[in-house]
Image (cartoon, rainbow, N blue to C red):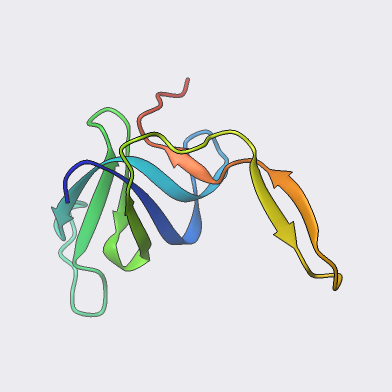
Length: 107
């Protein structure tokens, strides 16, 4: 895997800005299971993805990756359209993005 990807995770995670995200975008590097200093066994993941650059990145366990979309251009980081049918009728609305841009350096 080389280049920029939009990685969708199985669960929400927190970015360093304190917000919850469901996906991360940036340059991807595949890492082996000893990257965190712990040797994993067969009951856990044995590989990781580093998404972002050397100064700002997210490390995701391979077992938490749901989708990986090759995406050279930065995805939408503004409001995104969503919908609900929980009341039996279609309701459309805008929500904040759930994509973490791993290359941003937040202060």
